[in-house]
Amino acid sequence: AADIVAERQKSKKKPRTYADYREMLKEKDLDIVLVATPDHWHALPMIAAVEAGADVWVQKPISVDVVEGQAMVAAARKHQRVVQVGTQRRSTPHLIEARDRVIKEGKLGKIAFVEIYCYYHMRARENPPDTTPPDYLDYEMWTGPAPLRPYNKLVHPRSWRAFMEYGNGIMGDMCIHMLDMVRWMLDLGWPKRITSSGGIFVEKQSKANIPDTQTATFDFEELPVVWQHRTWGEANDREYPWGATFYGDKGTLKASVFKYEFTPYGKKEPTLKGEALYEYDKYPEDRTEKDLERHVASAVRWHMQDFLKAIALRGRPVADIEQGHISTASCILANLSMKLGRSLVWDADKQQVVGDEEANKLLRRPYRKPWLHPEV
Image (tube, rainbow, N blue to C red; front, top):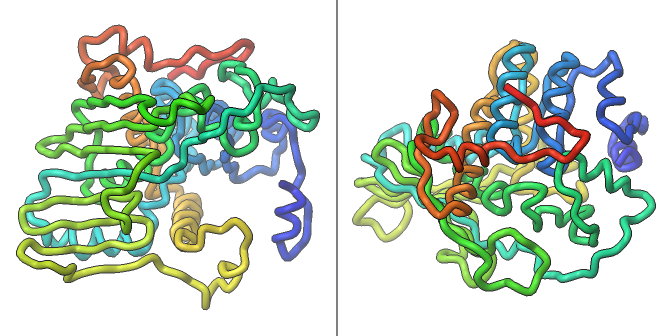
């Protein structure tokens, strides 16, 4: 990683490297910490970073359980640190335009139903044998507070999302982006009730243990937001394999990372549309940067600029840690609903499931020793 960064920077300076984030945080010259680890390693480094006096960018989902997220919000507030979450749909230029031109101007009328969805074939299909971890990988440290499962090549470096031990499946990876986008566009807080069902129905041959099929309903005030993912079969609309559809009594808005389209009722074709912003003239390196998803480059850049502005002004960024917690925890609660086979009613003030002690016990995952679960 250090070699790659040195190659990309004009200075060619190689960053200092560490095998343990705790050693890095002992440095006295850290202003900003970016936490872009596997999901099970988000909470502890983020909390330690704000305790060390740094502002933080933490990837989504912010946590693997609800109590982790509560502790992360509490730590950010206690130490008065700026924490931006990597839910950059809030900084996506064409989605900002869609919110302002369509939703805020009332073109949809009364919005009473929203669909969010992902039909990417992104679930691991392999069934590799378990092996000894490679010499270069400290598997004990990589696993950290998560359960120590047998190593195989799906675990590291890229396919760890195949396992619920390290995250919350596609719900915690892809639903959170779209749910957060909807919440931001419509200025929504916590859902009141969450119901989910699903499982591994088709792709049963893989070692992966995350659902290949799942639906979830997030009930807000007079507004159900319904998620669906399948990692098999065709998308309902091939132009929108991952996105959101807003239904109002005056029209429909479809939105994705690539574009948006507003179609008034009674019309066959969209009357308003927009596409992802490419900033090649201003940032020609976007054309040649390796491993860059070019259609989201402007969103990531705008999100980082928002983060830096919040640091300078000591204010809240557009994807503040509390907003990240709401979107993350809502997805975790959906998985708990699926696990328990029943709806969960959420008390946002008490941060608990109403009348369901079994569910409340699952708001915290057990940590593997010697790691200690963060507390609020």
